[in-house]
Image (cartoon, rainbow, N blue to C red; front, side, top):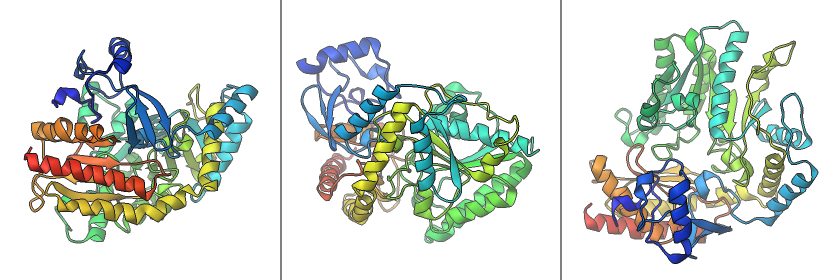
Amino acid sequence: MTINEIISDGITVSSPDHASYGYSERARRHLWLQMSRMGAYSETNEVPIMVRGEGTHVWDANGKKYFDGLSGLFTNMLGHGRSDIGAAAAEQISTMAYFPLWTYAHPKAIELAEKIASLAPGDLNRVFFTTGGGEAVESAWKLARQYHKLRGDTDRYKVISRDVAYHGTTLGALTITSLEDYRTPFEPLVPGAVKVPAVNFYRAEKFADDFEAFGLWSAKHIEEAILREGPETIAAVFLEPVQNAGGCFTPPRGYWQSVREICDRYGVLLVSDEVICAFGRLGTWFGGQKYDFVPDIICCAKGLSSGYAPIGAMIVSDRIAEPFQHGDTSFIHGFTWAGHPVSCAIALKSIEIIEDEHVLENVLANEDYFRDSLESLKEIPIVGDVRGTGYFWGIELVKDQTSKETWAGEDAERLLRGYVSPEMFRRGLICRSDDRGDPVVQLAPPLISTRDDIDFMVGTLREVFTGAAALHI
């Protein structure tokens, strides 16, 4: 199978079948796929058409079954095809399908905001709804800027984020994002983006034998950046509890507490981007609860509705919200579809199911089993590192385990898109092959996944990685 048979995010394209060929042709003519190499599709190279989902699996137009090892896109926490969520949506549609939150409110937005506040850590009690994660990040940067101006700190506009990190594609969120291939086509971006190293212990050049010391050293880079730029110019620091791009970089013990102390010392807002990490992905409602820190703002989306409707949110501490609660001050920002009544009803039902069916407990009960199963893959020569937590894991692939020599350029292309991705897809596993940093394969299954599901994912990866090692790609 050739590189042109793979789309850009590592999901393969198979030979055409009569059942899906009509849809594929229509898609080629009219549908512009997200984040995808449109030139990868030809008359003999079909667009994958997914037509049905049930539980942890989806089926394509040819009737082939796949395990959804990425939860769609880190989103489908409760599996596909839940009629109880559909019923909640139908009930809301029949009551009131839509009304905006611009100077008005509606019951489901109020109920959902109240519920989110009850789950969030510390005093994060104010919920500003968006329709997705990038909008939540965009909102947080704008809020941070206006908050500082209201307090008289008119020069605080800059934002600090980590290398390789992804925070969204709107212009402000893209500025916070640190992936050059995503940024370059749209430059110049918003002024004020400052980058610090990612918490990548596997590639550590200092404190490579001491995870905790490495974390404190990494946090120190944030302080150095604040001092270098001038504390009076820094509005916020944006970090993910576990960094997605680059392959599930987990923080060392003490890292977040050090970052929190640094931000407090210099009057900088700490924003936790939990678009992926919130609502159970790590086994807790929010990442701050996993790593024992309380940010000033949380950005979330994806798992909030388990993927059944578009919705996101910016959750704000009482302290940050306070200047906006008096007189004629407004946060001049909003989205037509934010807090859509149907999306809110679905999100409320999703949270109810997570609670009633003890979904977080399922993640925590299987977390160590997941880790140990993936660690067994290190027997394969090309498996360098396994990292992650909860139901969020990355496996870094290397040319040599001892030297940690990586694949890059055409080598990485041949490995990931030329072999690993198509072989996983052929075996019925959907996950992510990612070369936005060093080559990694990511797994983030629905939170209802069982140990049998873990065995299938790891067994499939074992077959594929063993084959790739034998081919000496």
